[in-house]
Image (cartoon, rainbow, N blue to C red; front, side, top):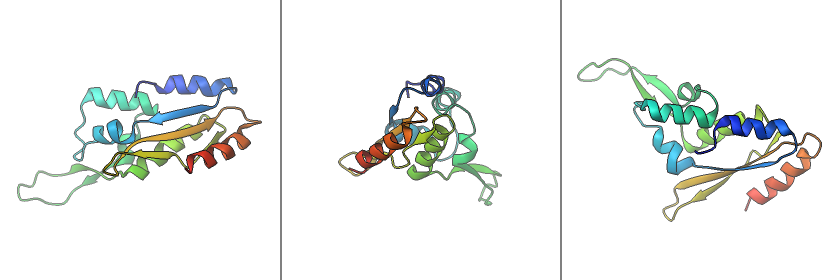
Length: 141
């Protein structure tokens, strides 16, 4: 989470650099997305910096208005799964890169929980199509 979105945008603007991103799927992002939606301002800013905008909250959370014993009203509930987070990041990359491999490689721990995801985006509009074809093949392994 140390690379802010403006840096990724700067790479994309060169149209000369292909990008591999080791995305902290399970070790950071999923852990920061609390089940109840109560996320500290510091974590929200960090997620905003990484995703490049703040609409991730509306994407990953839904209002849950089921009545409870104490009738506390509407609460937010996390609805995002790992696949939703991956799709969101792919869509973000597509906004600035001409070609993006849509099959990030997930890296798991010994308990089969995803820790990271490896993404690829091609910056060159002319050679990007073949670069993504090669990356898709590599990411399948």
